[in-house]
Image (cartoon, rainbow, N blue to C red):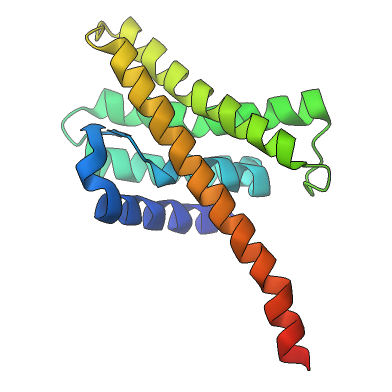
Length: 176
């Protein structure tokens, strides 16, 4: 599951670069960020294995693509990017009794998790930016990352939901 997460994340990153490169606020912060959706989705589906895959994928992307000249930002950013969805997942399991099978994941709870993740990820990153002394445009950067994570996560989650709706109809149609 970690390997599936790595592949899915890297593909989402490439798709995001292709479709939304013109919506980049600064390197690593986009107004629409599909990989954020992959982060939450893979963590919800795969738990710790998804988080591990996200850490590996984020390290690869950050070190070799986004921040090759800033190893601290690359490593800390990867840790925070994989910790945020896992933290939301663990809190959801505790607070809502979310089952590993996700059978009790209601649409309202899913939306709450999306919103919680869209706040948690930029919050963790911007706390680190502030501690590092990079206080210029913190509010704007937080807003851009929140909007990008929220929009990207909603796009990925609802695209997967739409695909899953098609699956049973397609499978039933091929049996006849």
